[in-house]
Length: 432
Image 1 (cartoon, rainbow, N blue to C red):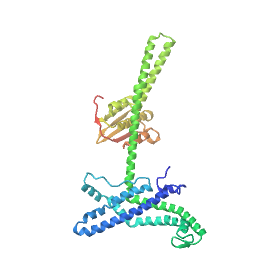
Image 2: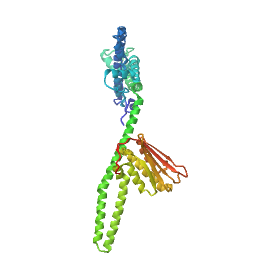
Image 3: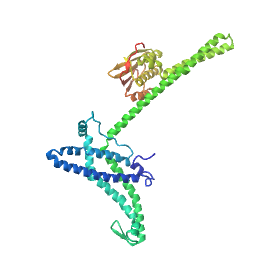
Image 4: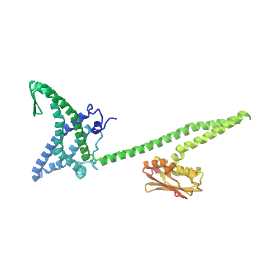
């Protein structure tokens, strides 16, 4: 996996042969250039604006000075890409409406604007000299030492030269020894440059990149991706249901009818018995296929909505179920599907484990929320974490920002409650 920043690159054995040392040098050198420009610009605005403030002409310049952190921060977020491939989000909010005045008021009221101005002052006064010092010590000094033989052969006429303008070298063995030492220091300096560039990048990201906003954006994107996965899953379920309903089921119906007609035309005997057996098996396969289709995505849910689908599930339950569900319209497909399968799973658990004599499903839609309650008079003691099938449904409900709660004390009753935030998408079909 390719390293995302200079810190990760330094932990790998190929750091010296990679592009990261050069990226670190580029980051620090461009920091020196940008810092000098920022210093000149800030000092000029402050001096001219302060001098002309007496006659009110300098007030616009002072406003521009207050906004000086904006371009500096924008450039710094772009420079971060040299040593950190993760994008730094811009904390500035978009104005509510267009217009220079609205934009100006929005910027002046934001905390990020003043934080970026503080960073610009720190950058212009302190950070770029530190960048220049690191580049000088970790890069220029070792390069100068490594070039000692070349300087001795050219500038020194082959007789002598000075190392860092401090020590005089008069022999070739000494010159080459200094060059080897310079190369070793240059390799060490590459790590020093990486550490300095990484520290500068972390400080910059801390001061001008809103980590909370970045984390919030990632959480929002994660939530959206989960919702997209649920929608895609539901769409695939509906497609499989349609394919089975319109394809395999119709072929089984035709086969069952053909076998039934063949039984009528064949006289009693072994062949008639075999046809009767085949007809019965085809009927059983058709019934099982219909149950499978119904479990994948019932057609009544797609056609008539949640109320009709829950009533149909209650009719098919082996335990008598009373239904009082009032949903005056259609809901989002993902919400309808999740609510329906929660009810189906609850009724299946009631039939298998509760020993209940009766169950009830109640709920409705009000205040932008769908509420469903499934209650039974069984023995209780149900545990959603013990593999009852509700754990997966709880995850599915949470994807839709819903809540699922189970209350099942020993001796009963058991109450399953699920709640979804949702709005009606269309009026109810009264023909259901």
